[in-house]
Structures are given as structure tokens and as C-alpha cells.
Image: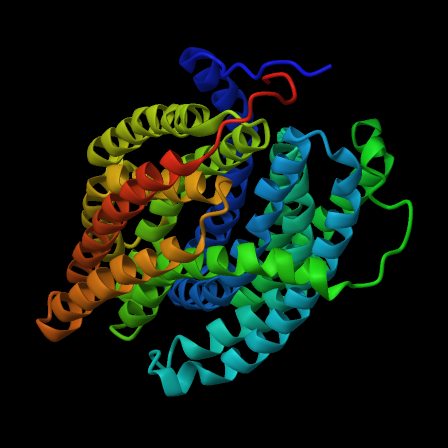
Length: 459
């Protein structure tokens, strides 16, 4: 017997998205706090260590965005299967996704090994290169664990169970804080490792998180019906190719945005220690603020995907997208006000160097200016992922982030000598264009979603 599918009211959709997003936001904040912990420990160790961690972190995150974004195919795939009542297919999909995650992790380990040798030829200041290289040599050992962790986390998110993202995210901080301090400054049997010690501590944390998440999935009654580990499946190219078809454009899109920030950090790293350290502080604060709309975007991906699976049509899909938008506008208003009023207080947490603090505080004013466009473009991209509309957004993102953002930033910052402030103006321009293009794309794509007259009960 079939039942009519009734879209939820808008207020209900906002509440569902908020409840779903809250642990995701907390988990992403925990992830952002990893960079915060590294930066604070490095900043109190020395300005040279902070600059090295700034460049090393940029090199680390730039290639990581491809596998991280590619694995974002998992939540909408799982969410649509769950919405259609096809839970038996979730386990086989997950096992193929784990093969994909493992392969991406190994490839990224090899890439980071090669990139560490290219810091000097790229033009990074010579006094930064040794510490940044040591940081990369340490943190690369955690990359395979991190890609597997992303895969497991995205599975959990896709079935509307986001609490583990928060728990394991903050659990990682419990490991990183004492380990990072001990390995950076030296304590007991551990010698002083500076930036290299922070890299090793981060790798240890990543393996701890992945191992704990795998154990949780294996023993949790909530996941028992999906039979995630009940049998061994060899890699199957058909299923992996399907994940890549959806996920690789997401990976490229995420990389287009993230690389705008990362390459900006690398270019600023050519200017010297003071500029690199100040930029690291400002971009770390901006990244922490971004964790909120990023979590809301992931929740919106799941809600939009679920609306598609339940056959709610354009009205249901747009309702899910607009619910996320309302929440993003509220949170970005708050973060913008906090950056405008509290930027000087924030930078004092990171450093006691007056010159670094002054430059970092001025850069946070630019960060306040891009809170709205950054939140809107992230939310729009998340809604499009829920529709599995990933190829055209990839090209739109490339045009916005690189055609506008990087070209303008490089022209002002390096060509005209405006320094870090010119590069940050480029960030604002790129994010604003992305918000317009991706938002318009969602409005267009959401009109084409068909309505199913029958299906699972509304959630």
C-alpha cells in the first residue's frame, strides 16, 4: 500500500536542518580547532615555527581537498538510497567507497612526499623551508587514516546521524593538544621537534580518530542493519566509477575554492615571515568561522538528497535549500559582527609579536567582509551536491575563484605591491562571484526535480 508524499512545512524543515547540522558544525569546528591548536602552539614556540606551519598546512590541505571533496559523493548517495527505502544497498556502497578512500589516501601520501621537495623551487622564503618540510614529513603519515575517516564520517552523515562527527572531532583534539605540545616543545622522553613535532602529533591524532570511528561502526546497533563489515568485497570498478562520476567534480570544486586560500598563503609566504605568520592567524580564524556554513551546507546536501529520494519534487528540494540559507544568513551575521568588533582580541590569543598582531588584525576586517558571500556560496554548493549536480558547478567555481579571485588578488597583492591586503581583496571578489553563480545554478537546477505521487513517508 503506497502513501502520498507530503513535503514538510518550512519551519519544520528549518528545525530538521538545524538539528542535523548542529553536530556537523561542532565537528567541523573541532576540525578547524586542529589548525587553531597547531597555530597557537607554533606561535608560542616562535614566529619562524608559525610561518613554517602556515606554509606546511597550506601544502597539506591543497591536495587533500581533492579526495575530501570526491568522498562527498557518499552523503547524497547514501541519503537518496535511504530516502528511497533501499537500505540494503548502503553497505555495498560503503565498502566500495572505503576502497576509493584508501586508494586516494595512498596517492596523497606519495604526492605530499614529492611536494615537500619543491618548497625551495616554488620560491618560499629560505628560512621557512626547513620547518615546513619537517611538518609535511610528519603529517603525511596520517593522510591514509584521514581519507578513511572522511569516508566513515560521510556515511554516518548521509543517514542523518551526525553526532559521531562531533564526538570524534573533539576526541581528536583531546589527543592533539598534549601530544602537539610535547612534540613541539619537548617533554620527558620527547625531544623538541618544533614544526616537525606538530606534524607527527597531527598524524597520530588522525590514526586515533579513524580507528575509533571504525570500531564504533562495527559495534553500533544503529548501523547493524546496514551490514557494513559483515563481508569482504573486492574493489569493483563500476561502483567506484559511479562514485567518481559524482564525487570528482565535487573534489575539483572544493579544490577550486580551497586552493584560492591555499595559493594565497603560498604567495604571501614569498613575502617573508611576518606576512606569512599574520596571514596564518587571519586565515585560521576565517577558517574557523567557515566551519559553521560548511556544516550547514553538508546538512543541506543530506536534506536535499533525501527530498529527491522521497520524490518531493521542486517544492520539497527548494524548501530544503532555502531552510539552509536562512540558517546561514543568521550565522554569518553573527560571525561578521564578531570579527568587526573583536579582531584585536582574537589575534592576541595567537601571538605576542606586536607587528604580526597588527597585520593579522587588519586582515580580519577583510574576513568580516566576505562572511555573507562565503556562506552563500558554500550553502549553494551543498544544495547542488544534494541534487548530484556537480559538473557545471565545477566550471562555475573555477571561473569565480581563479578567473576572478586569484587573478585580482595576485594583481593587487604582488603586481601593484599591496601585499597581503591586496590578496584578501581578491578573496572577497572570488567568493562574491561564486555566491552569485552557484546560487543561480541551484535555482535553475531545482526546477527540474520530478514529483513522485507515492513514496516513503515524509521525514
